[in-house]
Image (cartoon, rainbow, N blue to C red; front, side):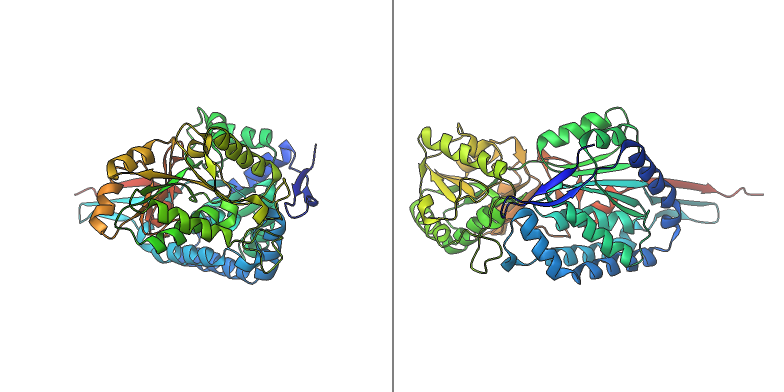
Length: 461
């Protein structure tokens, strides 16, 4: 069996190496998770919540190590810290709503009948987590799954496989039993075999469209429920009444933060013709102020992409667009750290259109295309001209206008004057090739439980 290697984007070295579980060991692992679930679900809800919150607190205590390891694993500058703000907010919110959300809905409680709908844990939840926000994306499902009474198996992306180890260390140290939460390293064939054998009762996957298709093929005929958050090409629309400064600052940050490697990052922008020139000018100035460099350098605001092959995709999209008539506004020479590998200079493209891959296919890197539009109708048509639908950002002064436009956008979340953010009280979901299912909010608990109806009748004598 071949070891799985984690190649650091910082310097190209092998940062970690782990052997994947052999097939028999993997099936034994899944069996232990199944066997441990009834006892975990039988614990009082308050106890499960307390253990999960203690586990997250233990994870917070690892912050210095976590931040350093994140930089080595996926390149995020250490100046931005870890992901603890979101981890804590999501844990706290899901903990707060658990009792009410999971409580039975009583239809009748009389001398003759007791009828109600309960929520029951699905069993074993399998999380296949991505590398771009490796703690946040895991927590989205891990916290509600454990609180609801499921056991959890986590398989993290090879690019951030130490994240799974840190979570396991924190959760086990806080008192969550070993078999209730297991972190594993698996290869693709073993993963597919486990899913195909119905080893899990729910599979949550965050990753590429191709990865989601592979999960669906593996689960075909098993009736295993799936939660899939796949690709995105999230648009921003700047209307004539937008606050220009705020739009530039938020949309450029949404496009460039984390080297553009954000599930809901801004990848294409449509600007009303009255603001277009000013928006482009200010956006170029904003991006030129970034500093690409080693993530351990306190001056770096942009680190390397997680892998040089990811950067190669973005470079190819940019080159193709320029060859087809697009204009690149950022001179890569301004960013001498661009090494042709994982370190990639940010880019803004104009004179783009939807015949170009950079405007239609997921880039997942520090590049954004900007197009001029004449009105709402043109912007809506362009925003919807995409195989993806995760988020859309609308810039206007009016709630009603944003909501009316949002009704016409094929997307999972509509933002007004905001972008690249997850609100734990709102469902995180997508449509089209972005996938299906939802996490966070009360619906996040519904994803990891099933309704169970009780119709209890007393025999009258």
